[in-house]
Length: 283
Image (tube, rainbow, N blue to C red):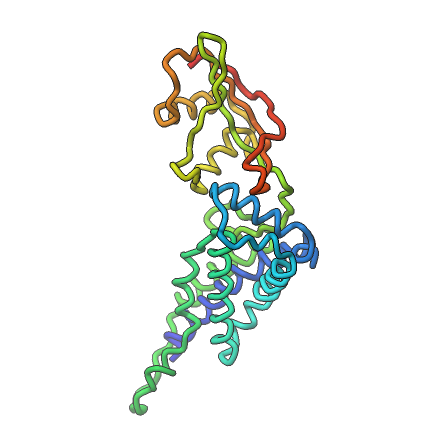
């Protein structure tokens, strides 16, 4: 009945928008070069550097496989709205989507778990549970509010997706990964100067394995002046927040905050390429 069909149609359209607009952004920015150049390798290296680890299978050593995977990503994202729309292709779209996310988790270390739950809208349960014999009653109609709410949600997703607004609220485009990030990434460093004149690079915002969460990286990029202007008060406040976990020695009399660029090549072990002082203060 339309009472179920209409909201399911909106849900599939929203799910299609989640995939389509990041794919469109990739196509606009780099075209097939997104999949066939060094871009995808650099994207991998960035994510591995953020996680402080890399998978056991180094797909970056197999460029043919990497490029084939990139072409699959582009094809799936750009065709997702059509694949989700037609009943005959939804099952294959669900399989392709699961494969897409399994590979993303294994290779990119990105789970995207929130999207997995949405795949229920692609599964036709009538295959497993055949319909009962028809009864003498009119099928339920969809509420007018279903159309209103669905249209508002879809319009927000489409407009912000077309504008490539990934940092907006309450509607935003999913991360696009459209730009080639290169082989270095920004980082925040705190260098502590002790009373005897020696300097110590402080380790912070990492667990025992060297892992940082995406929230921690977002905060670091903001404090280091990557996504926001440098604010020395913010730098000092952030240092106060991490001081306990960073094991700052008691005889430190000065701290220098630096915006560094580090190599993301897994074989370079986050080697520092450049450093720029953004704040100096007494802790």
